[in-house]
Image 1 (cartoon, one colour):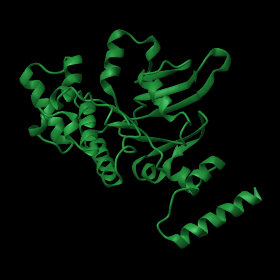
Image 2 (cartoon, helix red, strand yellow; image 1 turned 90 degrees about the vertical axis):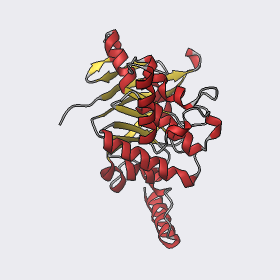
Image 3 (tube, one colour; image 1 turned 60 degrees about the vertical axis):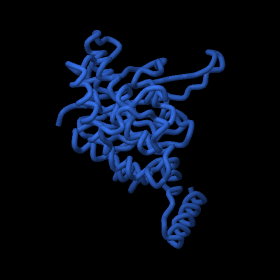
Image 4 (tube, helix red, strand yellow; image 1 turned 45 degrees about the vertical axis):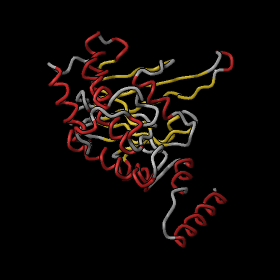
Length: 275
């Protein structure tokens, strides 16, 4: 098995004045290999999104390092950094704010092709834009339309197409369905899963929804107050959680059967009293 494409080692990030700085990411390490999906879970404020932003360079970490194909980015040459920006693409949480409202779909999806000079001609650029739009279930009839013309689910498909246009090896997804209606969340999740399997992408997937993470991910990392409290294969963490915080998160997953849900909550209460 080949080594990880993307890895983080000891990432630390604080915000605020030095004297009153609040550490939101504290010595976080992880790795993801080809074709693997890593889920990062935890309550709001646990440092999940900040970790991703440090990995892709939207925030500068105070300490630690990011490695791409085993090479630390801090010591990488210009070509390696350019390759990283092309090969690691991010899908943001809110499709209503992540797309420029003044750009057409063709311009939005093709922007990365321009930046990385990945299209030999204007026609080649358009052909690639149409190709990735069709890959996410859209078509060429929307090229000249603006983001305001679309639903939330369609906008997120456009955002995914933008990320895929340059042929990345890693997708970094920051709660990509949490801003969408429940009715379209499953469509976007299934789309991401199809793209991952079809293209062999590595994926880092941040989510609140643990049931979704269990369905989608191969490995999971649990964060609390900026610290990784548990990680491992999804089956191991979900079936045999070791940390109390992980247990409390799993206990909060709703069960459709009310009687089973009540029984589980009662058992969890007994465990807490006996701890």
